[in-house]
Length: 68
Image (cartoon, rainbow, N blue to C red; front, side, top):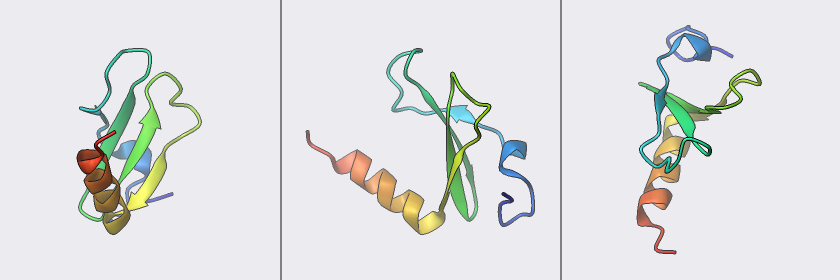
């Protein structure tokens, strides 16, 4: 799968999510102008889940506002 820039998701720079608490359960995030992708730090081989910008923003809003 390619991003809007025409680059494959794997070509984008992934960073450790600020929501990851431990080394055993972390995810990495790559963001670009039209969306983002998330992958498991420990199991990168299967690839990443990609989200359109609106979906990604909705996810972040929910994560930030979750009071559980």
